[in-house]
Image (tube, rainbow, N blue to C red; front, side):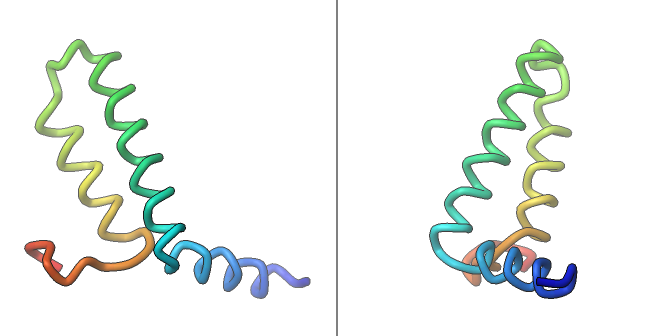
Length: 67
């Protein structure tokens, strides 16, 4: 499989419901870890970064504002 085919396969996996759930879980874990490391001082910025990353990964939720 070439690199383009591998990228397509990864994108298709993220576009599935299961992929969306897994990407959301990973983003939530990363945000929680960042919040713990900063002692909660950057909570709003971390949440904003998490939401921006979620907009670019996987399925787009039509009920989500700004999408």
